[in-house]
Length: 274
Length: 274
Image 1 (cartoon, chains in turn blue, brown):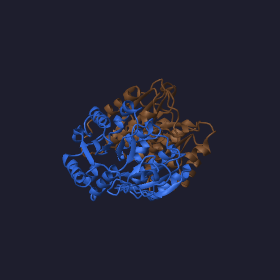
Image 2 (cartoon, each protein chain N blue to C red; image 1 turned 45 degrees about the vertical axis):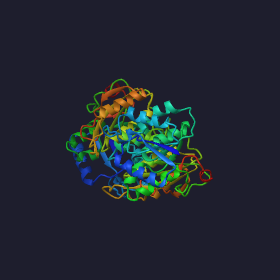
Image 3 (cartoon, rainbow over the protein chains, first blue to last red; image 1 turned 90 degrees about the horizontal axis):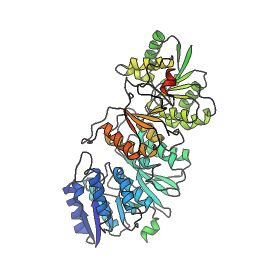
Image 4 (tube, rainbow over the protein chains, first blue to last red; image 1 turned 180 degrees about the vertical axis):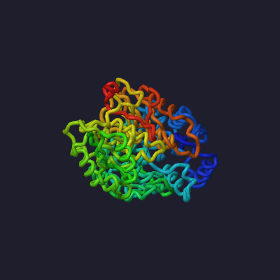
């Protein structure tokens, strides 16, 4: 049995979300035991409970002996507990997997930098709400059960990481982001104007000189602006990469959507598939 | 006669905006000669002309012999020409004033860091559109004509800088932001959700350990979120300052509004008033 401990470091899911994910796991992944922490359903203003409650649940899951910690939902808030998580977990081994994306990237970054968990970008329980979301959940559960079918198809022998672009921008220059020199960086974004995406690329490419390359995932739900920005997303990425001397390697199959694929940090695809 | 050269490093104003500002200057500030560069009215997608045109106009104004360069409008885009501005202007003296705010903060930061102009946060020609905007324009023109009446009232003997919070966040860790150690940093924001403001504070306070203190200007036009964030703006600032060991000194009289006051970078108020 592989135990999966689930908490919500940012915003909550509902019991109905959890039940749907549990039903898929029970029916199709008998080797997995999902353990939803009560904190997944907590509410305090914007967050799934106050900082102290979210941190305590994260530490409960981390220290539960589970093979993996799965983040229930992003939104906003995991940056508010990342410093304490680093303080409490640094120095232990990195055998446990931590799986999630979007706002949970703060925790994935820190886990990777301080080597207290194996960070993996991939779907979360909340994705069950999306059109086709059950497939996203199956992809994550499959990965947790040992399948490599859900891996991002462009992964190669170079170590890679994947981030939401805003999350990566907020991590740049902080003590929570690992040194990305020599890695391929995959980025995706949701619900940001193209001018804001352009601005985020200015910031991250200033910081990420020395990475192996960048690939662009999907920009979902781009809001209408008062006038067209005048440049397409891929041209934005290409332009800023060129200015910073970063190789741009095309699209990545990640995003805030049901098709979002799995990117194990650092692990070359050959390792993951072996 | 004091010559003021005006260009638009980000987005354009209209000829009607310029005419209204010119009328105020002609009637009330006879010592000022405003020179609106044609580029102020250029349009290319989101921007006041392509990067090359905006850069050329900025250099025209910088090299015109004018006592001050006044930025017509923010929006987004001055970061796209800041690297070239640094390359072309570094090494000259800092006698010329550069006046603006918001997105123009990229240029103010670089001018301050590379000492090729005296950076000043303050109203711009576009502010004439606001309710009470003529007063904002008069405040800027008064400053350019030698008055210190428009200075931010909390300035004291400590050198200060002022930034839009997003602009500051995008500058953090880049080669364009001066060392802010020992300075009082004033920030303001507009049209950002409170969770995004909280996130920006996470980023900037990670970067700004060592500043003398922080003061919070106005957060204008905060969009409604799907649920209340649960924390007031000043508590957000206080919380992140406390976490980073930064002194929080209360509110600042700056913002995206007609009341926006003047903050000359680095200059202690005593110097400005002397």
